[in-house]
Length: 97
Image (cartoon, rainbow, N blue to C red; front, top):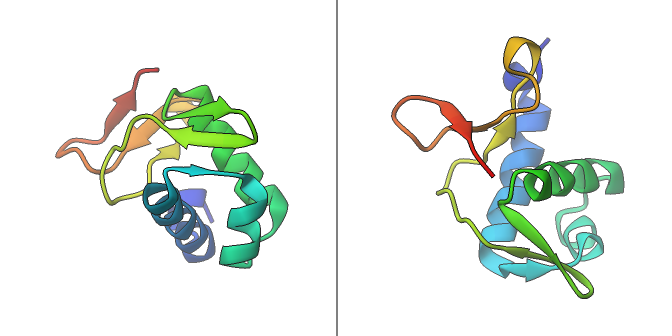
């Protein structure tokens, strides 16, 4: 099963993304506690968003600098590996940092 089709990962990713959009500035530990998700899951997703310029590291955590919309962005696998996909756009395309 691919990440895109795994309902558990989609739910976790969606929950993390919604919390990030609400808090705007946060520590990963806060998200872990509030969302009751594994630390690794939160760190991996936050790290991906930082690599693509959606989040920026700030003292004590991270800050949302590019709100892409309500649908959670995700890193592509396979041929487009390493690209951040924004499902809020009519045509799914990679997001540049």
